[in-house]
Image 1 (cartoon, rainbow, N blue to C red):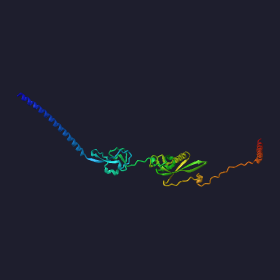
Image 2 (image 1 turned 180 degrees about the vertical axis):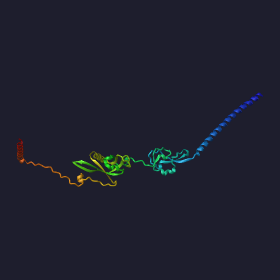
Image 3 (image 1 turned 45 degrees about the vertical axis):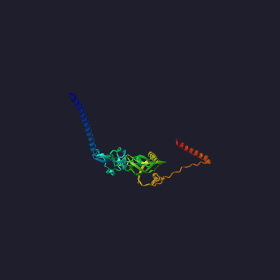
Image 4 (image 1 turned 135 degrees about the vertical axis):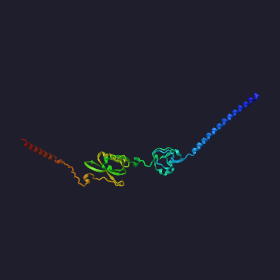
Length: 283
């Protein structure tokens, strides 16, 4: 009897171990199933998240880039992550030609704050022709005309100077193009300097004339290509039509060898007469 009871208890223990293992397996399977289902639900929720199309940089774009279609691409972005300043692809045509104010990395959404439609001022060197230099001169050197000059104007510069005891005025530089007035390329500034486009030779002539003469600027029409020739008579008297003073030809003394003794005797006689008169006047 006791043996049968012991045998039954052993079988119950084995059955209990199997039951516990089975229960543990079922619980584990249920936990895994729940985790998988939760993950699937999360992925499905993400898939159901509203997406919007936005313009992004097709590749790294540096600041100063003038936008064209090749610079941009379209990307789907979750609506909740979209900035209000981002740009819809339907607005692409209104962005072409805009200039980037900041660098935009590849794939980064393009924002309206990145753009400007105000063209940056061109570099001064870009306005020079090949072989030209930018010559900056003081406004005082050009007289009162400097106050009314604007970028794009053309001027002639004359120089007045003394040469061989004559005061002359001659054209120094003609058709000089004004690049900038003061510090403003558009010429709105009443600055103290004028920047001209000049060749190296013209610049050297201007510097030399400024050191030795008085400069005067004259405004000309920008389309006027006429060349003013230097007048042969450019002093004031000749320019206003006055007769120049006649020049006295220097005298030339002619000495004859056969008359040298007679002139010497005549000179001695005159000197003796002067001395005799002087002696009579003394008491």
